[in-house]
Length: 434
Image (cartoon, rainbow, N blue to C red):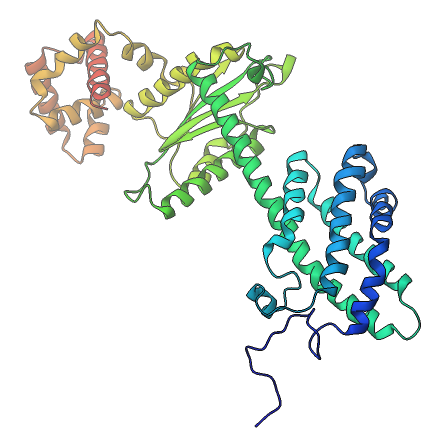
């Protein structure tokens, strides 16, 4: 047998008895209660003025809200100490939480969320709570008389335990509100970027004027590997957000400014503000490799310059088309400008003549080996030996296949004009299948 209490015995630090608050400590707290208002006033006016940034706060915030919160915290402590233990209170008390339920922290949470919304730095807020606990300890120390050393030590220990819960509640509420505000701002910015890209937002709108595009800028269209078949799951959502975060960081650091982005599955757009009178920003060296590492896969990015916000919608469409044409033309992934695909881009937008040119190769539709040989032959500048080497054929086989292409299509590839028609037809057929 043992005299130890059962494991489910109450451990409320405020309870009377050997494990609770002594009568002497309760009496000391009771004598402090009349000093709460004056101590709270001293906190908000004098003590907190040591905190960097606090003196710059609006007077009403310091005199009303912060003073009221300080007064609430002081009174809550001294009154709660005097409250007899009640076993029916929240079970948190059995875990040693001096305040029991989260309701005791409600005002602290509310004020923390408000401070986050107003932009007060978290260190300033936390220092005010820690300093407030010190001022409360000073009040207890001043009131305590000879022979009350044990009671003072008892309340001091309790104050430290209380402060743990308060700081935790304040930090959690602040960070939750800050996360909510950050997401709200990100969504607002995404809406602005979306309106900027599709032209639904007027270039002279207030939200656009602050984006820094008056001096020009760049529009990028990004395309990378599509998401895995598990898209939509929690894991894929987290992976996509992390990828978007890496891409955002890569673009911001590369261009040395905050880049406006709108990411989608498999790609997205980026709008880079210019340098004022200095014109569009320079594309950083190695950007293609950085984007590839951020995406963890090959990335195509087309870049188009703009003179102002009004040019962004057309630039976005052009950039998307450059990416498509570059891919269809067999260019390797990387950074593309319209100059890289000027000929192909022109062909891709000749809607009337395009189908007629592409139809020249219809006789080869069921002969993929002839189409492959023709494409390689043109890529090798009509060199039969290079073509044979790439395809693993004998040069005579290449000659026979090219002769068959001429027979079926009527294109004599030895004639420059026929070779140009064959090249155009190949490109147009590939674009229409993508």
